[in-house]
Image (cartoon, rainbow, N blue to C red; front, side, top):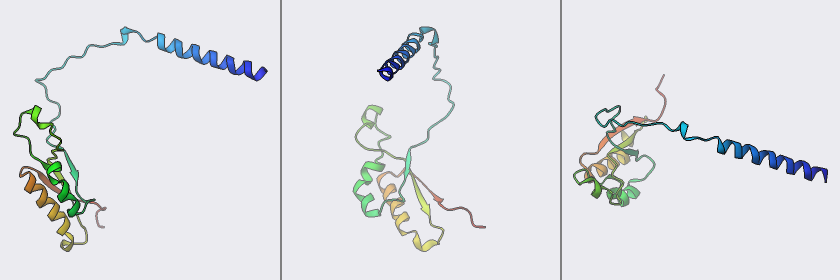
Length: 129
């Protein structure tokens, strides 16, 4: 019975602490935010993904969805179920030119869907000594 009373006391103390914290929130914490649309701090120049994990066969089935170019459409029409990626990162295989087939095919596929897509390659390994 003593443990039960102790547990109830802990519950009551906890409840009172939570209640005290919640009631101490006041509107005085509120701040005014001023948005100046004439000031630019950062420009987003595109959205992208890497195509290195997918085979070209699987990319072909979703290419229109990934890289569809709707930038000429009004903003309300750009929400059309397409991802609309404008950047494609491909793998630079450190083993040499003979392994470029899949990446070149992915880049070509992206460009066929959106001629404005930016393609760039990156090495995925540390620099050689």
